[in-house]
Length: 379
Image (tube, rainbow, N blue to C red):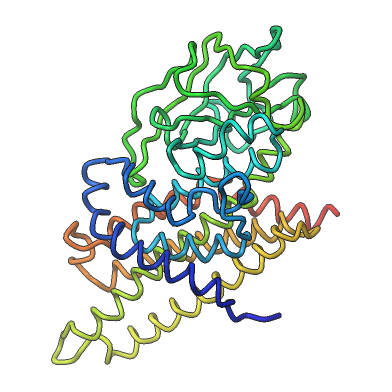
């Protein structure tokens, strides 16, 4: 139980921190206000090895661990939480293809995903199946060397701009065993996208519906076997939940650091804010809660990386706690800035808008409680 980072971990932590501060942070406000998908910055991140964090080296990846990933995403989120979260989604898809795909899809997709020459989206949620993901209705019927897809996906990050879409589709009967995973390439006839959603946050990545109308997809794009899709999707989410919690912690740490500096400078009633005991205690609580969340995420990352029996439960615990605490800390930091925290001249309101959705996606925090309670009480 060694809590010290290795020399390699400290090195890529420093690399991610420098990239976040020098490349992402100066542009984050512009990306948010103009709803810019920052292609050049994403590819610069990929050049540092952040486009295929978990992918094997022979496919162009960095072959890092789940723990390594949480360290990287915590740092990236301090530059732009929204963009860091998209990089997490992209990495989830690349990992799914690398681990569960055959040689053909691995050779076809991974090199360009690792360099972020191509971008990836994860397509599970549908208009009528959110938390009840196993009830999805998008169908894929075999027709010779192709599958023909019909249906729609909702709330897809990267919709319209991504090059590949890892889609969970129904190839068999009802329930999770009838679901398969197939990669659909942008430009495939029958694939279309809805209008960009107008969102509270996460504005540096577009969100749209993804629609299939007799969309013919080569059968070689199937990831795993027919019926494996739900298991593949849930395995991907275990890792995604770690990363989204790490993004919440990173965003909150960024806000807390700024708040500490602000309370040392701002004076009211003749004293610095940092001299008021009530505010000092709030800072102490925020720092304590973030440290606890960070430890939970890193413990869960080791469990997921090692395929421990309790990995899914620990990932759900870490996601629920990390994203709840992340939002609580950011909201508290905004409060400590008073009216200034509410202005766009300060970045805290942007981080608040970005981290709020982390309590909803990758499985709502209510579903995280369901996973944890089921594992504790029903086994």
